[in-house]
Image 1 (tube, rainbow, N blue to C red):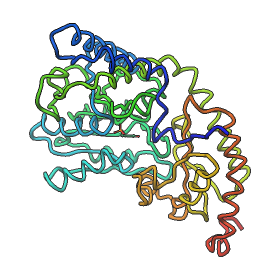
Image 2 (cartoon, rainbow, N blue to C red):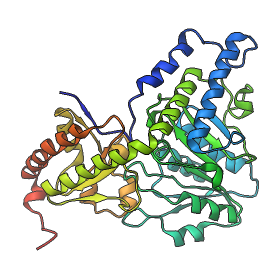
Image 3 (cartoon, rainbow, N blue to C red):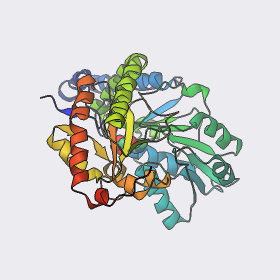
Length: 393
Ligand SMILES: *Cc1c(COP(=O)(O)O)cnc(C)c1O
């Protein structure tokens, strides 16, 4: 039986074409991209092509910069720290309650250790940003507005282009953690007011440990890592040439498949949601259903523990994520669902299914064949279920 992998927001399979593109850069074209000889030039050519491929996927002109990083986390850290360092006199950050820990943990640390003021804007029950709160938070001391493009737990999208214009009007820089959106939704960065954007290779069928930060042409910048002159002084350290080449190829493939694949991925997701809701009671889909990623379904099941469901699905060869695991890899209840004021019981039973272009109809069938029985058995054994007060009389 083919294993069913529906945890593509955690990571995706590296496309075999990506691996094939990378291999020569380990074994034959292994030069240091900074070296003055032919080996170096070959490596530098690989990096140059990858930069073009990423720029093309993002709809960024060639004069906009891509700084290759070790992943989404480093890109986010670079953007946030750069914005603070490059704008003396501006020491406030505006962000949201549903960002990835790569943003929230850093800004909490800056607040505690450097006296940076952080405005954490809330969301409503569907995960939509509180716009009044957002506008109140912007001010003359705002250095940076950092709002994710797509939420990793629910798939909810944020209107980053409009938010970027508002940030610019307030004289602040605008950054978006677009790790879950890049490669899944079309983008033309050069037509937007977005100053910085983070992406990660392993969320778009590229390798792990490589990512990038888009910098709008001319945006003020301070490097996170200092040392050698790699990346035009933007990021010191010998380039991860095979990883960069792999990210470039992954970006090229994503751009090629983007239009055709997202429609049928959304179809699989919708069939899963409808099938689950038809078969299992006391369940609901969470997130902004009117505006979300096509690949993500976050479904809350009352009266079960999502980690028990995850374990039983895993035994059946089906990989998904729970509300706690997708938040932090730990057992803390999801900060995203808490910010949406989802009742504690539903948070405990929240499961995330996330699809990719490797997904197929039989993956959905496997879930629909297995999940009702798992939920039924767990509920039958649960005192919560026996003592429940039905939501509807
Ligand atoms: C995965 C993820 C990250 C972290 O990216 P890494 O490359 O794993 O460091 C950041 N933000 C979001 C929204 C993510 O989903």
